Image (cartoon, rainbow, N blue to C red; front, side, top):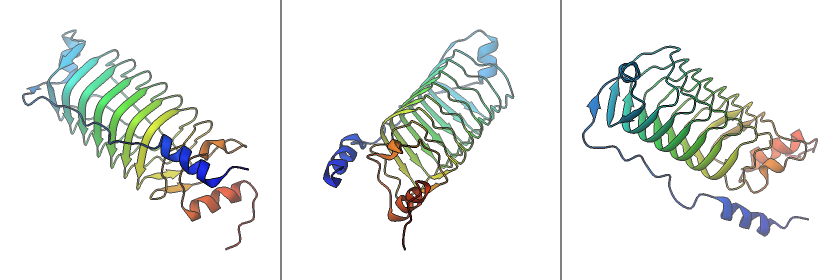
Amino acid sequence: MIIPSMVQGDFDKAAASREAVPPTIPDVLLPGTLRDLVAADEVEVRNLDCTDETALEESFTELDIEGARFSHCRYAGCDFTQSIFRDVAFEDCDFSNAKMDSTGFVRCSFTSCKLTGASFLESSFEDVRLKDCSLSYSALTQSRWKHMALHGCDLTGADMAEMEQRFVRVSECRFADTSFFRTHLAGIDFTTSLLENVTFSDSMTEFYGAKLNVYQAASLARCLGIIVEE
């Protein structure tokens, strides 16, 4: 039998003990676009202020971007595979169906961004903040999250299978028809978020050490064939 106090201890040990570190953006940024930089064979991008750029289904692979801000940009269907972003802020940007596999994000923030259908297979996120973003139907399989913070985000239909996560905070997010298959969720507090029709393994070990409210716990119990009397 698992003693409740032991589970609480495991939750406390896995829960985030600090806030995700925000990006450090230089005071002076140079205006420009990714398209122009790539055309000039620039791979290392520094101190960029990119505003209102639209690039659809273009290739931006293996870029190294540091100390930059992207505002009101649209990169739907673009390929950022094996790129790395350090100290970058994305504001009101559209990355729908973009490919960001094996990509690294360190001290980045996404605010009001559209990441619907984007692919982040085997990507790494450390000290990343997402606020009011859509990640519905995104592919996050085997990605790694450390010191992440998500607020007001929609992960409907997202594939979050076989992820590695440590010190993740979620609040007021939507997890409907989301797959957590073989992703251990210890330390995550789901109580302020929607958790509905999620996928997990038969053993349900994914939720060991996670925090749920009474209604969420009852819903998961019904998935296991347990009769919950209200």
